Image 1: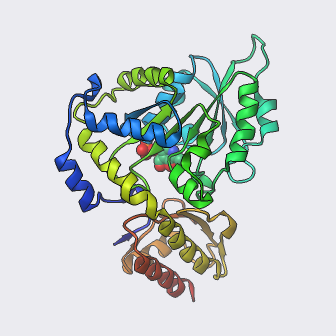
Image 2: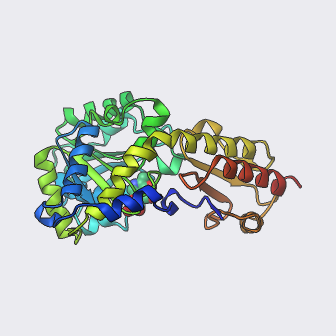
Length: 343
Ligand SMILES: Cc1ncc(COP(=O)(O)O)c(C=O)c1O
């Protein structure tokens, strides 16, 4: 099957499995796993930050960062559809006792610095103190659109000017960097922390990285333990992540080209709503007019042709390209849409 439901469905490559088998390991809770330690140092360097922390998932990375930046009762400014606020089980409230102030991202998940400035709570006993702003790059709910270094800087300037920190949920930061043709470190240069995932477009089986200052990472390390995320011989996982950086990051532009190809086919069909300008990386979002076809029927017809898509959104779909979708697969998908949507 060609599985477009998510970039989390990728299987580890043979090279990853081999690296996992060969990995030197130790007890990572004691900071004694050489493969994890090397990955943390490598990622900190890549992000231009002081230190890194290997965690089990993107959710754990974001939540450890929130925990480390704030105290109970603080308010965090986020974009309205940000993963950290919508899809992490309310962990910001459960684990860190935070409230969110959700702003409309315009365009495509980018926070307007003036709106951020206006949203910061004044020093008033009635208000929860605002201490953190979060950005998501790429922005999942907007089709994987990218936030530029300049846009990030504008938000960071406002946040820092008022003594707030800036965290970036960079689950797909390497997709953003690839799209913009810049080093990932440039996109997080003005932030205080970043979380990015190895288990999405980077095709590793497990793991995310949080980066920031040494002092922040010490607090995030405590949070990771508190959340039950202290892993022991985690080097077997980190070994695959090293391979991601070596072999998958350099090929992400292929995923973007495949997404583009499929999106351009979709855009030729009546009843398909798609914003081609928002197809910048590996995520395609589109809506299908129910008078053309019920969403579930579309998913069924594609399944008959060996293509899996997520049909939980009714008439709204998200397709994601990744390392297990080849150029031929992308052609097959485009051809399948051409057939099933041409009535
Ligand atoms: C933007 C974004 N942030 C964070 C996460 C959470 O990652 P995980 O599923 O590894 O917890 C996801 C997952 O899809 C995501 O898309």
